[in-house]
Image 1 (cartoon, rainbow, N blue to C red):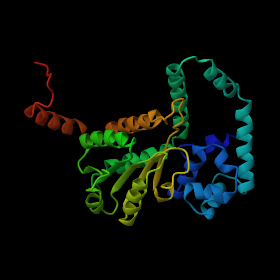
Image 2: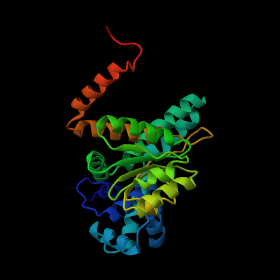
Image 3: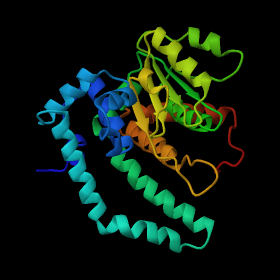
Image 4: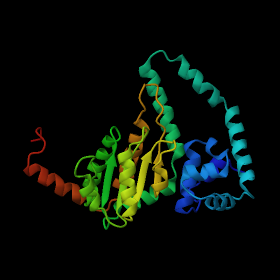
Length: 284
């Protein structure tokens, strides 16, 4: 029988949006998030206890206790794995912060890949390429650069993409958010109150909220229709956004491969840029 982790990340697993939120909560801190009371897992995922019960049965387990036994077996196997023993030792043998950071970033990217739910990626790409609905991007003090970076690429791919900037015009901009619009919120610890307000207003206006966050207990989780989470631990005194940036780059790659009018849009945009001499150094 496959491990529980392989089971919950299988691309063929048919899940409801609420069940996908539970899987995301499990993967964020696997297997720890599933080892406590059912109510704690439900709170972390932002769902109800019955959702957990339905998911456990869908996975083929008789109850939550049997499900937790499978989690414990996965944990026991992981603790016996040689790679689990080697990685900390390799980390300690590095003598400089530069190498330590790059090594840890490599491991964080592997962990980020393990957190990926293919169905979430498929749905998010579908939402973003649906030009019937607008896209709005909001980021925090540091994560704003991720929101801006993604937004700049989205504007090359489609129309109707806007920034939700933390300034005096934010309420006006939020007023323009409509039903079924997509609001992308980037918010990592320490979680910002303004991000919570943006997500709350978006839900009040019946928009879909996609939260890009860390693997911890963000207060925005319960408001999100989809959660894309990434590890942020770093050898630096500051959290790292390397895995989150990799997720944004991967999303852009997925979008460009499925955007039917990309070549035509880029050609038209480049022609206009040429008229405005956007680039100082052009090939003759």
